[in-house]
Image (cartoon, rainbow, N blue to C red):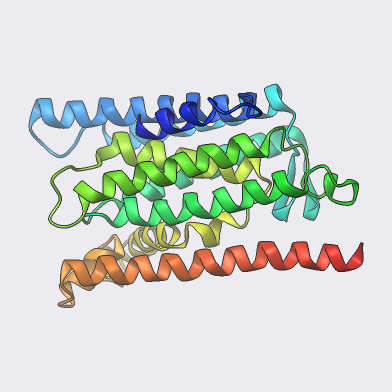
Length: 295
């Protein structure tokens, strides 16, 4: 809600129209957050830590993600290439239906990765803040150079990158405000309503700014957290349910069991997130500099 209010207030200034891409992002965030709210409500109502059975929740969010990806493609005609720092790099062309499924998987995976990260006070909010800050820079950069003919295709059909920058900046501020109360020891908890919403927003910003593959670096901590769960389950099943690679997953619990204090785990994970975001922005700006030299 804070992010949405910040985004709306930004439009009081003349010259910043509402874009259809940004509005679709907000509808997607609201839809996934509503799913998270339902899960949280059931947990509180039934007084146990299982809301919607995790497999059902996974299938539902997967279907929602693919549906939202299809809407984004159908309504905004964004570039349907697999991209790293811009639409034509590497610019792998895929059929539209393949891209929709791929984009849906990106949305689903990112939303659930942020959800998995939300296990320690401030961990998910702090890493998401850095991710949104990166997208604010990327979207503003696309706005700044979007009208130059040499870069028009390179940045693709980003209809109103300034509006996406405002959205990312608003979410950055919202995460910062939330983190004030969520930092250890937390007075407010994020829950699925927050984590699914934030993850969805991060995924959509990657899709709308043509930086899909760069999302792996921008959300490196989330990738690491979700990846640790996948690896743990694989090792456990492959060993006949006898061995585990980590003491406990998600991986932040592994380090807690090694004796790291909670605040140490959180701050070190923030540092990892910050370094990965810096590398991602370095790659983005470095690629632009290379284009500038070629021009």
